[in-house]
Length: 282
Image 1 (cartoon, rainbow, N blue to C red):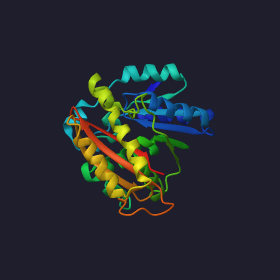
Image 2: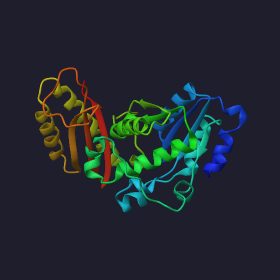
Image 3: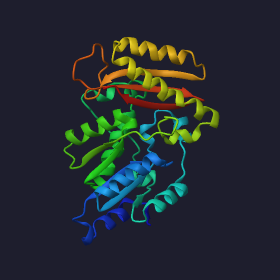
Image 4: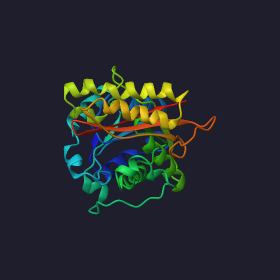
């Protein structure tokens, strides 16, 4: 299995005559791979002749320098996991210099308001960084299909908007959240949790599941208050936000509209580690 460290090397491989008519599946990651990432790779392998995985901790989408510094970087372990899954996967693990070519700044994007909700409110500039790296990677790899997990549902919707607005010829495929047996959404940040915090964090999905049940009979505001009160009972957690929003616009639900799809979105801290999750409320 080959690991490409420069876009030039990767493009030479992808542009070989025998590869030019093949579908390319692409899974972008920031590394610290887990079973959720592997499930995306498995879907890409099943649906495309070529699969490319990128491993790149993108500095422009972090608005907290300490968070960027502490983000887990486990390239050797990641490559071993990928090799055990399928030796034909192409791994692109570039440097910041290779991606940004000496100009490590974000482009400013307008996602028709999707960027102003939830994560956008609490992480200024985050989605400019996301759009910048995703657009660059799409231009380098030119994938047929790109696979994103629904754990970052707002990001998924933003990437879909990016592709439409910039007329990028790639099919965006959203994949279900992959969870631990406890219900905790798999995330690279989970690597930083102590064993006790990891056990406690199953509470996040338990509360989300109860919120889903209540949404059938209660108003959105009542469900939000329920979630906020549940976290107040658990001092090891700090709830940053819980919002119920429409899946298409990501606008906060004030009053339920029949046949509209809603999700509950959450961000919570434990041991100063920020975890996000969401759940369909249909």
